Length: 382
Image (cartoon, rainbow, N blue to C red; front, side):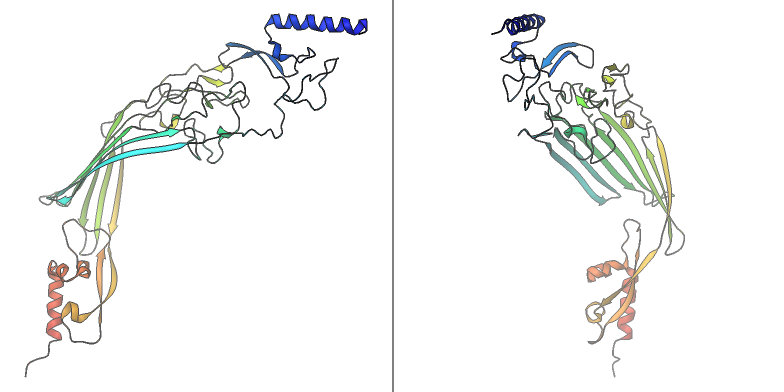
């Protein structure tokens, strides 16, 4: 070997030894002692912690450089935009919902009814669907969850690891009784209180993605690592009071009183440790700020009022006179049946006659019409 090349090789080996002493592993060099060009020093996370460096040797050549240290033609180091046989994006998206629901219902009798249910559920996975709700991404169908692969440095944290999704609630309880006043000045008033109790959603540390710079992208320690939002409960009341104007027209005055106790509580906390990669967020873990701000606080008490007018709709039914009225054979009769759009409770209308004769017996007006028609079509005795 010429003396000049020998000196270059000795110098290169000395440099490699010095670099190794600095902390770069030997695998970052090829068989000719050339350092890979895919070498990065001074890596740190978004919190400024020193992570050292990283190097990526050639995936198809060794040596990958000539004697001058220049990369050989065709040498690949794993970061090139080309087919590599490795699946990209989310390899196994999951969204699994399991639930058990217990219902207790009572039909209207003695002026009151009840609808109640208790749902015990679990929603787990690594993909929320077309709309990503954990960071408020408000463009359905365009999710950043598939933009990056973990890579050698796992720059997407626990994003592909299943866990409790943002809408996961273990318990939801609803109770809706209804009572109708049938005596006194409040006759016809319908009162429906409603009680809802639900457990909180999971809270997750979401950090920025370095390439995008967007905050709230990557679940750093797994979904639900910050615990859960508090259990909440609200009481609402619905009132409906019908007032008859004419025989066929009724006005309904209704009021919805929501959160009548005016309960005010924070439903979420700021789940973003940074506002950009490397820029820490002073509001992290503070209640009601930043993360999912559209539902970070419970709405205060509010009232909604409405006035509705109901009027009858006429429906002509073709009936068999012989079956319903005992008329002579042949022909049929067409008569209007009025169905009010909203009906007071505990009242049977003539439309019930469609179900059969038993329905007609419950309606005095229908019985009177039936008797009149029979008299008109009865053959007089001679």
